[in-house]
Image (tube, rainbow, N blue to C red):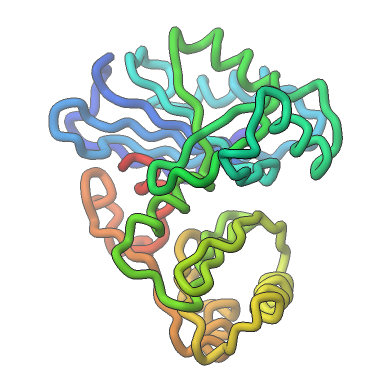
Length: 280
């Protein structure tokens, strides 16, 4: 079942096939974004909660979203679909062949005939290829709904964002929070080390994974630069506990631009940053 949790629209939002349409498929969320072809601003944003089991029919989910979305049903010439799932690997480009990506994914996540394998070059580096799996049920629905669309993975957006920065701190960890999972990316001495998704139910789950990673890379907590964004409230226990452990903690805040200006003050400035960066 899909439920709309957030829906914000600019006053002049209307059907225009030249607008860019961006979707992100997550474990528990689906996001729809419309970006103006004229102003280049985000003019509509919708966040849906997906209450589904592993065997739920994506046809039903798409039908529910089409019924309640004010963005999804329009025609667009430019469509990008991001996949925010854990079945992704960074493979050195020199090791990638026609079959090796599927072999690596099968080795780590198990064999599957229900997925398509996708590839994506990182714009910020020529070293790695991001290869990931997508449910065939989703790609078949997208092919029926859109004349043409591009696919991408959320990991690539995170890596490109950080790797384009002129300086990366010697011990740097970036975390993006979602409803019931988070993504951690790690750099040591400006070298990329790890990106991975973890499910969580409590603050203790997050702290466990984070402490294990700091020990794995021999980080001193006082030297770690921890950057967080997404669904984390500065007033809640989790942020308080993170702040007590990591003295160099910051939030990745976005400027209130486009339609996000209408919710300024209602949500913290880092809440929509992961989604805004999908549009850059």
